[in-house]
Length: 313
Image 1 (cartoon, rainbow, N blue to C red):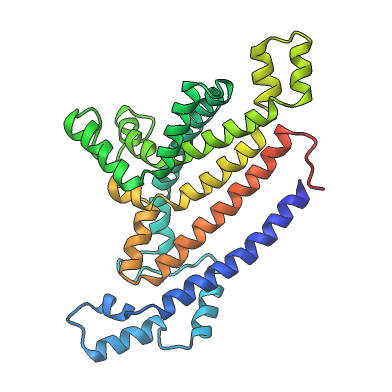
Image 2 (cartoon, one colour):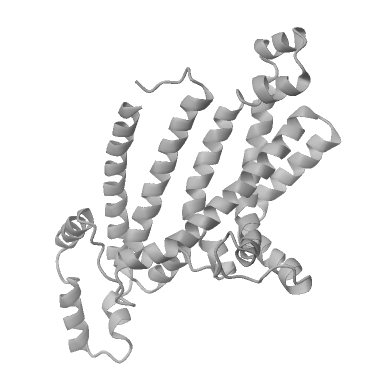
């Protein structure tokens, strides 16, 4: 386990270095001038040049990148060009909303996906299997922005059961729970579809194994055969899909946050890109990359609990 953590730590360092270089390079060569965004339309040429000097934009690329890395290692990601707010502070305010949305979406995806996949596998080639497979295909195909707008139209505008958007109340309150339902369903649908398909295929493969046939031959109750012998051994590929999707959800909440007016990191990142706010974009991308690696580490650790035969030594 320690070897795994060390190996993942080294991978994380190299990954963050590579991502920071790519993001910094992309923002550096992108068209537009951040000084214009900072100075506004009324800034003179002299003012713009002074802003560039103050922000260090006139320095060579490697000098700028080296200065950024030096400050980032110390935990200093600079200040927003637009709001003048500390980048770390701005992200820390918005990140809880993104994390709550990703967790709620993953809960929806796991519940729907595993139940649908299990039913589909146990009722193989029946109308339930066909229906489940069809819904899984639809879930993967439907765009989030369309599904979100449709859910708002039906449940918030027409039926008025749920709020239109926002995430102002804690999730454990009644209002906060209502605010979370539609975004979580919108974001979790595609993940639920992938989990359902993987659960179905994995269970169909495991039920053909010798130890499952042996358990049935010994007279073990069918419920125990499914839950103990089949589902547990079929969960490793499912856990992989869950981990990958959760990492993707943390970085893929942009559209959902826009549709439901949620003040999260994804929405912050889009606004920062539009305004050429270099420090905000770079820190947001590094955060998402770090979380993705951490999630994959957690998935690797979970493997050892599901199947003790798996070791990383």
